[in-house]
Image (cartoon, rainbow, N blue to C red; front, side):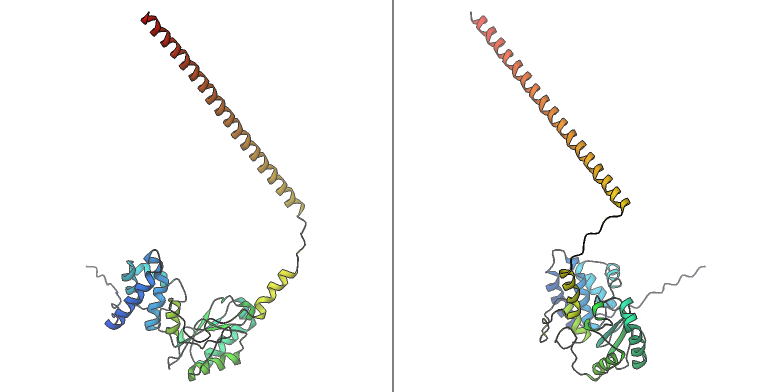
Length: 295
């Protein structure tokens, strides 16, 4: 007899009732922003991430229930986007960019030194629960490489020394602000609620402006006119053939439409004249017959 073992995970532990009641009210508020309920899935995932610091099985089940989706559908989205954590996360998620430019500018060294300094590896959390360290892909901040992010706030032009000082400040509970705005950092769970669409009430949260490095390229583009470059002879010839071909097709199309139009008008005109002629003859003939009968 063949024995079949089903390795099923433990069922998620439900939220406490007071937490669930609050989440249901907040989920309803989020869902009402969208024409279709399932469009609210991304902010709902941030909402449940704000409860436990990651998207747990309980959170997935809650989102599925609120939106009328299956757990599999919600899981597919939660595992696709890297901003949704699937394991418990510390108060501060420190992401070091190790994509090409940041890496060659020092990102790889920063990550290596932070691993040694904190005594943890990629995706791990310090024993005090303060910092989760991770290497991440491009932050779209190449003009300030190397860059790291803390709870998705930018820290530009980092060095191993500044990165170590930053995580030490976070672990001591000191107030830290990002490079781009003067708003103090909030915890990972608080950040998740903001990303769910709830107001960011931190002072100076909506202030900030692009930096010098970001604007430099724009100024160059505006002040420098790139001269028109001559085409390679072969490419120019191909483009000429392409234009001629399009011109022939256009002329044929217009000619065909014109002929069809004239033909249709002619047929309608002749048909109308013929019907009018036959109708007139019939009326005259009928009228003559009637007069003859009366006589």
